[in-house]
Each structure stands twice: as structure tokens, then as C-alpha cells.
Length: 331
Ligand code: ACO
Image 1: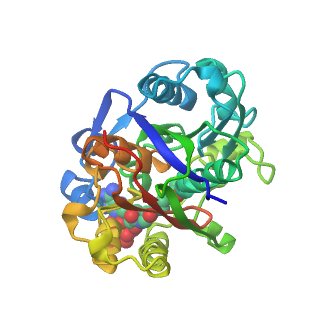
Image 2: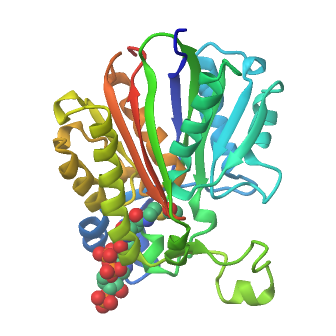
């Protein structure tokens, strides 16, 4: 029997218009453009400003454009998965809200939380629904309003994160294109180094949790950095080895944009030259679930049918993984 694969047949991104530059951050905390550029590679990030706007509103921008450019009616969508750590509300799922706002009334939908690896977990999950033959049109979203959980008096984290999102369409193909292989990993013991302390069932919101600033991102930067460098590079090398891919076979590496030094280390470990590595961390910072679809969207015009793409991510949890995609269309 011919194998069904899930192919990405369209992509669109959205970053809010407000630019928060390093110069502006210098006025908020004791830092400098030079420190941020040298230690992270970030020059500026986008922030979603405006009363009543949430993660779903960015996702709606991306999904509406995706539906338009792929010529898809919203009612045709059968499944929507939204990877996010900043849902509009604890429940219902942001995916449900996006489905409602975009008119995807026939879709079943859910959120997926794997911190910065969420988008690749969601892409893998969505691809399984296609490969099984259950669904023919799946939308996978990676979206985060990180500014809603960042403490702008904490210089260790506020320089890193930004807001943004992207969405892809997955459809079945019997050709040898699409999501070819994936490796996903989790190590829950890493939760001590990167988490949000309060707001869950362990520490529900209270005056105390607010006073102690426990609703913000907590990150032990150095510890996370060490794990991120080795895990992201190792899993990317592993997916290449098990599929007998050499660096020459790879057209693009799409790494999660957490820190330019982690991106460089991953590229070096895989033997991929810098010109084949998608990097836009300088413009957007770390948008958590938004980084990978924002990269693919920005590079879409350069992608050619048959390009071998390795996508890799690392995030809180700890979670990490890698996907081999054979790009399915010429833009
Ligand atoms: N400006 C100036 N100085 C600073 C700043 C700042 N913004 N932030 C920290 N420093 C200082 C520290 O206080 C420290 O000073 P000290 O030596 O006097 O104590 C010094 O700079 C070095 O601090 P480090 O934390 O060691 O800096 P490092 O080089 O590790 O960079 C960073 C910090 C950027 C956070 C880095 O560790 C990193 O990128 N970590 C990994 C992030 C990541 O991959 N996260 C996973 C995904 S995110 C998610 O899943 C939600």
C-alpha cells in the first residue's frame, strides 16, 4: 500500500507591529545593547500592544492569511492544534477560540504545551492524524504572547522574549515529500530550571504569588543553555544519521530561536554552513512557539520542492526534538 505522508502545503506568520528595541530595554533594566547582542544575538523584538488583545488574535491573523493563500474555506479544516504557553485563558483551549474566530466550524481543536518545542510536537502530532488517513486538512499553529508572562524588571528574561506566531497547513500526499521523520524527547527533571511557578493547581493565583512575581517566566539561564546546546545539536545529528543524510543533503536548518550561540553550536555540530541556517532572532527574539513557523514563513519564497529541511527545538520541560521535512512545493 502507498504510504500517506503529511505535507506542509502553506505557511503564514504574524508579528505585531510594535518594535521593542534594545535601546528601549536599556531604559527599563540595567543592561546594554552590546550585552544583549553579544550574549543572545537579539536586536529587537515585537510586542502585542492594545487592550483586549491576546495570543488568539495573532493566530487569527496568521490563520486567515493561510486560508486565503491556500484557497481553503474555513469549514474545510478538520483539525486545529495550537502550540502555546500563553493561552488566552487556562481553558478553553486557544485553538477553540481561533477556530471560532476564523469560522473553522467543522474542526476539532486542542492546545499543546511543550514550551519552546511545542510547535514541533504539534507538527508531529498533526502529521500522524494525516498519515493515519483520519484527516485531510489540518492547521498547526505556534503562537505566543510572551510579553504577558515576562517581568520587565528582570534583565535575565525580559531581553530574550517577544510576541509572534505562525501557522501551517498539513495535507496528505502519496509522493515522497512532507514530514519524513521526527524524534521527540522529554526530560521532566529539567522543570526545576525553567518554569512558571504559579497559576497552576500547585500554586493557584493569590496575593502572595503576585507579590512574589511567580506568574512570570522563571529561567536559570546558564543551566538551560548547557542542556539546550547539547540536546538540540545531538537530536539534529541523530535524525540525520538515522536517515543517512549528510550535511551536503541538507538545504536548510531551522533551529528554535532561543539564543544565537545555541543556533551556531547546533549548525556547527551538524556541519551545516551558516548560510543554510535560518536566523531571525535579531528581529523577533525568542517567540517560544512562534520561532520556527516565523522562520519558515520568512524563507518561504526561497524554499524549493524537494529541499531537505531539518527543524530542531529545545524548551522548558525539558522538551526537545527534531523533524526532517522534504519541502513539498515551489513558492
Ligand atoms: N544585561 C546585562 N547583564 C546581564 C543580563 C542582561 N540582560 N542578564 C544577565 N546579566 C549578567 C548576570 O547577572 C551575570 O552577571 P555576574 O557574572 O555578575 O553574576 C552575567 O551577566 C552572566 O550571566 P549568565 O546568566 O551567565 O549569562 P549567559 O551568558 O548565560 O546568558 C542567557 C544568559 C541569554 C539567558 C543564556 O543563558 C541563554 O540563552 N540560556 C538558554 C535559553 C534557552 O534556550 N531557553 C529555552 C527556551 S525558552 C522556553 O522554553 C520558554
